[in-house]
Length: 462
Image (cartoon, rainbow, N blue to C red; front, side, top):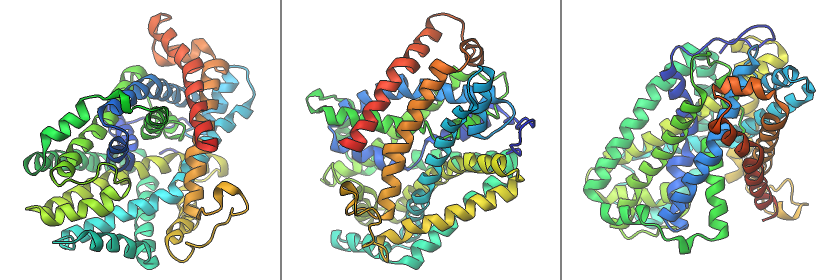
């Protein structure tokens, strides 16, 4: 990534393929492979999936297009705040609008303060799987295994440090030698592991039951709460309002189509989430496991299954390797705008900015690491009713997901829809002044703000 000082144009992606790999890699994270299957399981199957698809393309695509357009239009900086400020200046608006990008950078930084901890769990479970620790494991032993990991500060600290070090190193290497090179390894690994898991699940699981569950809609189960959850899942899975798409957009050359690639990225993100369902649910149905196992589905329930199935040691390792690839590609993308902001704000070189931001991420992330053990009883905001029992990890999660991201997305949609120069943005999007552009404008001006406001109200007051 280029040094993000004003007046220095960020370097471009080496190819459209590299750009797509990086963008899809960022969007495809643990939310697709870990959270999506159990959220579907808790909310009635394919009816939820169909509503999710509606939101993913109706809200996710317009926002991704907007963020890429801001990044490319900013021209002189890879920093999200700098890009928004530059676009505001072009429109004759206040540079204070750059704060919208700043909120997005803050959101993704707070996300990394607990995401590195969860990413560390996936590495730990990969090691346990290949070591054969899941062999003939009982339900009680599986629960104890996870509880023991949570109660082991040195082990959690070690994996947190490993994830932080990898993330910092890759970003410090820059756009071509770092981010592009990493995703060209990790994304094929992710797709390869997904294909292997699909084949394995079809062989040992109940594919018919899973297909019926995922492909036969029952809208009677789509309550208002489930609909709102589908909206939130689409919003957070794609990764809008995290400054990443703005930063990645700053490296786009003028020949790359923004609308077409936005559809590809959102479509690939959604496809992988659905494939994860087909990789997991046949096994779940074949073993009579509860569909609403929640977060424990991955770290407590599936190890039992892998311990019982033929080849479970090998395929359990493949599954957690899949999670590692998804976690690391997201970490790489999440950290990129933080590095770009640090470069721009403090006029640092790339390596120095990555090390400085990484040190802050590692240090503050210790709060999440220790929230499951030595600080489990520490509730820093206990004087606020809704946070009475919240750990540092819980607080980071709440403010990122329920406050910073919705506010950032709302302000982004207002900025791009009402403040930025209409003709300049339309040209950046590569759209004629016709139906496609007007549809995007209506969505970004009216539909997206209402949807994001609903997420915010439900998250904070629900």
